[in-house]
Length: 181
Image (cartoon, rainbow, N blue to C red; front, side, top):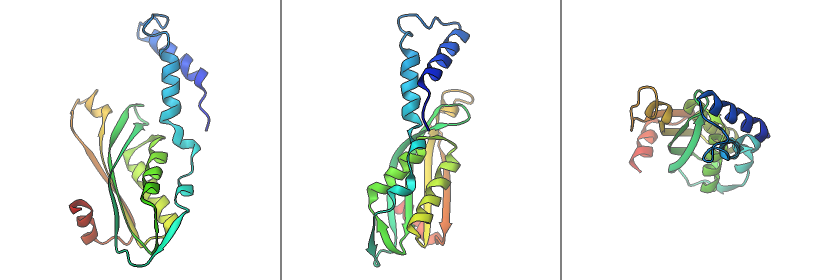
């Protein structure tokens, strides 16, 4: 998906005018271009393939559980076009194959750089890992702060939303390990 920067620039100019600002004012004259570049970056995940990141696997029959914790991410809420950010924890039970840990973080980045809902973000990552690695089970836990709740609306600064996505067989005892490690 390609970003139409000129269209975004015009939309930003329209917004500035709609709120009573002068888009030609010194402090604002470059804002439409900056915002267009920002949206190009924030939505760069549409042009990338998460599955491609999970193709290089290693034989490993001895691993019982793989956990990658505290993967920092930021995304954009599709409801308000405002950021949400936090930490993601990914755990999977290998079925004879493991993937390089950096690949999990890359998959997070690809799906986070799309307009998102937190629940969908976790589901997409869990689905991709389950489909490509074929593990016995996958758990994705997301803890995030949504600026649509902290900077506007109810203004509950510091509140976190926690969501879970599991696929396959992921025993409850393993869920506890994700939070202990």
